[in-house]
Length: 425
Ligand code: HEM
Image (cartoon, rainbow, N blue to C red; front, side, top):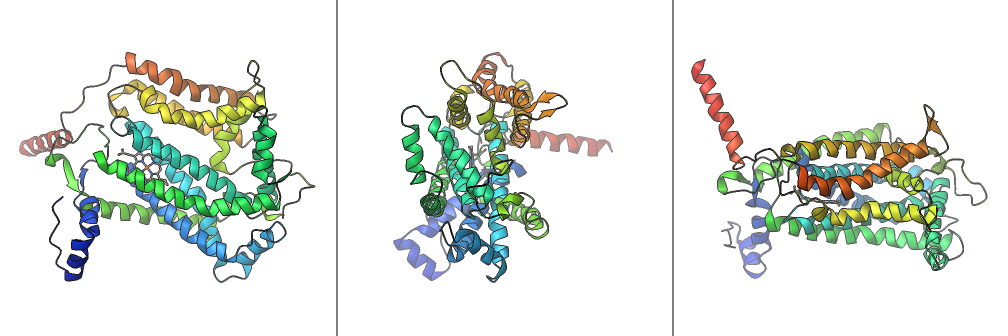
C-alpha cells in the first residue's frame, strides 16, 4: 500500500513510525466500493453506531447502578428520578437495545436477500452469526439487571430450560444461577458479563469488518466489480450517505426515546422482583419473541421430550445460519435474478413475523379458532424447511435470470436509452 502524502507534519511524523493514518486512508477513504449500493447497505454502519451508543450509555448507567438483589431496583429508580439526565441515559439504553436489534435484523435480511453470505464472504457472514449470538446473550442478561418482575421471571423461565439437558441439565442450571434459584449471585454474574460482552462484540465487529474489506462489499446486483468503472471511493460518497442514514435513523430513535420511551417495555418490570408472586404472562422482549415461539412450538419428538426438543430447535434455528453458505449453493447471489428464491425469501420474512406474533400470545389462546400453538408449529416448520430443504433444492432446480455483464452496464444502458429519448424529443 503506497503511503499517501499527508500535508500535516505531525500526521506525517506519526505515520512514518506507526502507519495508522495510511491504514485509515486506505480502508476508510480511498477504499473502492461498488457504486450501486442502496440504502440497505447503511445498516452495518447503523449497527456500529448503536453498538457505540449502547457501550457509552451503559458505562454511564453502571456508574449509578447497584448489582445487588435488594438494591438494584431502587438504584434504577434513582437513576430515573435523581441522577441528572439519568432518565435520558436509561431510555437511550433501553430503547437502544430495541433499535440495535431492528437495525441488525434488517442487516441480516439484507444479507439473505442479496446473497451476501455466499463465497467469498462466508466467514464474514459466520462472524455475523457469532455477533448475533453474543448480542442475544448480552440483551438477555441486561434485561435482568433492573430486577423487576419480568427481569426475575424471564430469567427464571429461560434458565430453567437448561434443566432439559439430559443428565447434566440440573448441574448446569445451578452453575448458571450460582445457587438454587435466580438470586443475588445470578444478578451479580449477569451484571459482570453484561458489562464484558459488548467489548467482545466490539472485537468481533472489528474482525467482521476486516473480513468485509478483504473482498469488499457485495451489492444489489450480486456480481463482482470488474474494474475501477464499477466503484467509487468510500469517502466522501459513502461516508456522507452513512451520516445521512444516521440522521434519519436518529429521528426514529429520538422519537421513541422522547415520546414513547416505554413502547417496547413491559409494565410489569416497573414492579420490583418478587419470587413469591408469578406474573400471569411472562413474555420476553419483542426481539426474542420468534425464538420463544419456536421454543414452545416443538412437541415430544420420539424419545426427546418437548422441553428439550424446544431448546434444541431454538438454538438450532440460529446455529443453522452458520451452514447457510453451503445450504444455498446457487452461484447467483442476488434475489433480483432468482425469482423463485425471492418468493421464498418473502415467505420466510412472513414466517418470522408470524413467529414473533405467536411468541407474544399464550399457546393456549387461539386466533379465529386456530390455536396459536398450531400457528407457531406451521411457522416453525416453514423456518426449518426453508433453510434445510427449499434452499438446497432451489440451488438445483431454479433457472436464474441472466446477470448483467458489469455493475455499470445497467446504468450506462439506461443513460444511452435516456439520451435516445432526449434526441427524439
Ligand atoms: C454489532 C452488529 C454488527 C455490526 C456493527 C456490523 C457491521 C457491518 C458493517 C459496517 C458492514 C458493512 C456495511 C454494510 O454492508 O451494511 C457489514 C457487512 C456485513 N455484515 Fe455485518 N454487522 C453486524 C452484525 C451482523 C450480523 C448479525 C450478520 C449476519 C448474521 C452480519 C452480516 C454481514 C454481511 C454478510 C455483510 C456483507 C454485506 C455485503 O457486502 O453485502 N452482520 N457489517
